[in-house]
Length: 170
Image 1 (cartoon, rainbow, N blue to C red):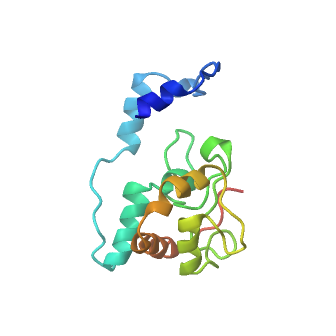
Image 2 (spheres, rainbow, N blue to C red):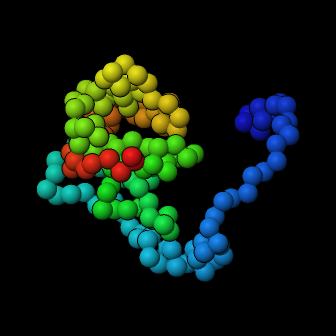
């Protein structure tokens, strides 16, 4: 059915755009070095000092939704700056700034309560009655809004627990 649908669409004349990669990141050797420095394979391990709901939220945020990938700044080689997890990224998805989602009261979501976060994950509405845009709107529409209520609440519990960090997306 998917193939039939795609074949029913009108073709679009649009040339492919090449990747913009710094010279020092081109080539297989660069990927091997980057993986050696930055990649750690492994399974999610629950934190025994936290309750099951928090661990479910941590699993959803880190293993499935990979929130850090967009909401954490990166270094010159494109690795996550894990000294500032979830503190926002001025060079986020599609070149748009990605906001701080730590519990920092001025720069993050520290003033949002649990219900505010659950509502945001469900429908993309902020406490100020604004709505998510860009890539986050897609994440909500195509992913988070389809989670169970319990999973959205677990994710909110985890996000509320993130230590406050001043905005890195200035």
